[in-house]
Image (tube, rainbow, N blue to C red; front, side):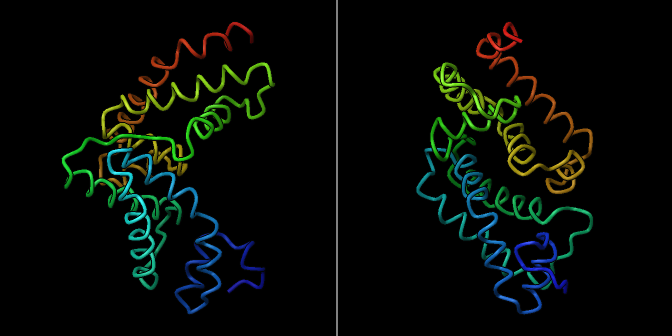
Length: 205
């Protein structure tokens, strides 16, 4: 293992160190991805299954722990692998409940506000734009809820996890063109849905 501090190691090396018995490596992994995974699960399950979010979150980590000795990156990032485990477990709960996938901001409108600002490279909106950004954040959550299940899942894996189209195809066991189409259609629907809120930015640019 590298002589670098654990906090400086990439996820894949941390997982290998954990498999070799280094418990501190797992603690670093957990601390690094706890918030993102929980937010992702909450958004996939939505308000209807909010009570099950913690269970799916914990089960995800149990699966990660159980797979520590079998983990093999094979070109995919550890984060993508972990998010795919969470995705599959959440979808199983949704299917069992008969509910459609819904997306809810884990931390409320401010969380969506942060995501939207970062997406548009406006991470620090001025105070006079705050009302606009809050409205846009709420609208983004509504637009996400309107996406078809498969498109929403692909979008969240791509933007929450940073998964490439190749990663999406591999992890969701889809043909490359199918994964690409799901993401493209999701983006097109979101752009259309968000158009009225983004128009003031385009006029000001």
